[in-house]
Image (cartoon, rainbow, N blue to C red; front, side):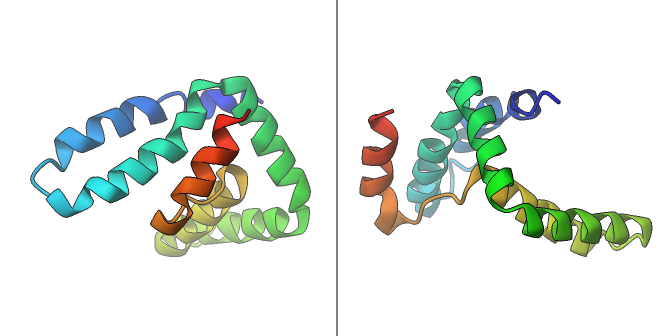
Length: 112
């Protein structure tokens, strides 16, 4: 499976985000956090390795989320399906760092 390929459009979507929300001045810190987090997508090989490691590290939770997602989809429960999909993406890609974590995040990711 081409895991990294699943995320090819993410950088372009995030590049457009500042234009889409340019009237929301309070969004700038959030956009900067998201852009810093999304910078990982410039290295698809590293993203694929990280996703594989993260999924292998949490196999029980991934299995539960996938099972629940399938159940939600088959039951047309799209709200819960979205929650499960979000949980799976968070396991695979990690959380977007909080503002208070940005300095440590930059340090960790600039040394690789």
